[in-house]
Image 1 (cartoon, rainbow, N blue to C red):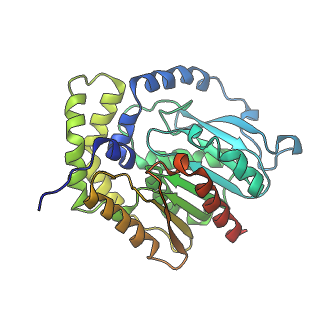
Image 2: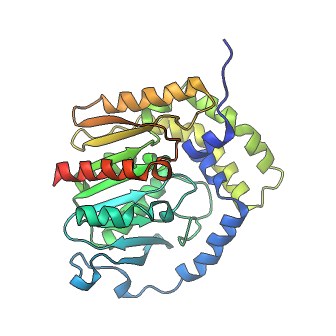
Length: 311
């Protein structure tokens, strides 16, 4: 039986090795331009207190936070009490959630936070390969500097699922719940699947090696070199039983052109969801992998449902 190779666009969105390739040359330039603003000195007022003034509630403000010498853009729509964090898919940044944030804040009254991972949006570029542990550190440092240490509902799309799984494993007491939106899950990255994904990325890596000095090419080469080992490690990550999760899987999956990989994606989501009684599996009917864009109302409903169940 012949195997179907995942198409390049699908792997770009589902897998961290190619998620960085989504950032085209123009986007990389834009990030570099934005960094000029990001590198301005931070005043103490740039980091919000845990108890905002009434005048701040409902307004979105940019806060630049520092973690290990690089700065990250966090966008905070202040509410009262609990916090909802929206983490974007690979190659995306905070603007992915722009239509959802105001509606989510209005529906829940919670503080809603989006942010740009390193190298995206207004956040500083960090040289070298993308490392999930560094991304987890960035998220935790940002929340800590914003005074947020508990009662977080974490929403993660695609590549951000890797960040969410490590974050939950390391910081279960910070989380009141999670919504994983067609997210990368440990169960998908098996010894059978990883070589298929590596093979699918190889043409892009070979093309990148012809011009290794381009920032996006250099990043892709570095990330692809460690992809197998990184995802073998990710496969062993365990989601804590104490943190409830809604697992959203898109109907088309990231592998719409590969029935075998699409089924493995669905099976991984089902396996994750069925591993504990406080997890729920739902399907975003008619949606591609880009569920926040294709079906924002559906995503909003699932986040509101998780939030309401915990508060």
